Image 1 (tube, helix red, strand yellow):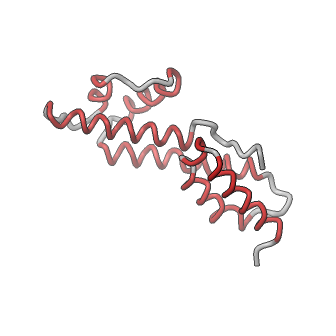
Image 2 (cartoon, helix red, strand yellow):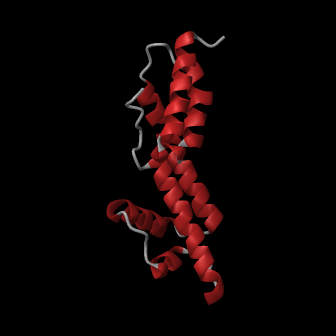
Image 3 (cartoon, helix red, strand yellow):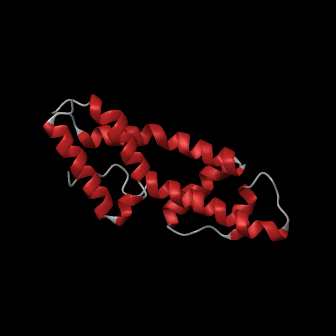
Length: 137
């Protein structure tokens, strides 16, 4: 049976997640944390550290999955995503085409580049923007 404190913490996490736009990208990560880690935490456990730990474990897996799904060059992908974090800007079309291992025809490139950038932005929003924040809990 779920303790009163963990039930209250679960409720507060969901309220927080739904109330702040920047945390909505983290919904899957937060749900994984609640389902997988919260039941194992002691009442006096450090919630922030536990949340940061699951993010640290899931981030590499998510990036590897995106690289495989979009057939991207891993080394160039890391450089590309790192530049996005540093500059806060979307990469140039040609730079994105360069990390794609399968070269597409001119007509298919625009859509493919959009999907790659969207995927990278989603991962960065989930794992890098405001990384392990649960400070208001």
